[in-house]
Length: 171
Image (cartoon, rainbow, N blue to C red; front, side, top):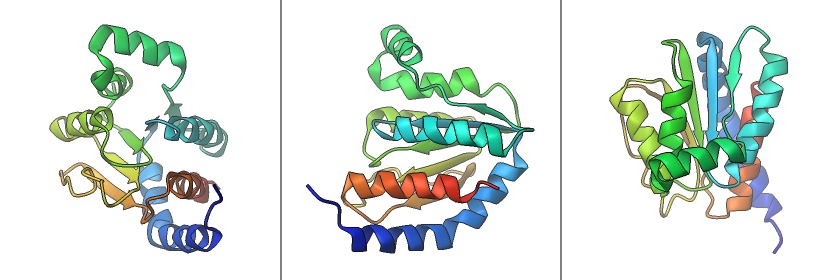
């Protein structure tokens, strides 16, 4: 399968134009950033986390996406609670921003993490796609600072745009 380059280009332009400034300002306001991805977006979170460490030397960056963290959490708390438990474990300070990434917004695992952030007033940014099945984008809560809904059903495009958005905030 090939990627629709016109759709990709259009979405990159739209998402970066509308969201880069806001995302950067939220990152600037928090001392600790936790990036958590679901599915292939966990690799994007991991990659961005490495770049964030270099670009934001005064910030503490956490990306709990390695297999050991995930397997231990799944066996201890159940598969659908993995991301929620990772948020609990890594949000120990008041000045923490959680960035949740997923190709779509219909995964129970991601929803539980977002609900935990909402219940505990944790500043959150959601970056998801696949609007036809996305349940998370419309979930509003006071600590949700930004919800970026990538307007594509193609997860390859969603993931490329996620990477571009996260890299657009680097100095």
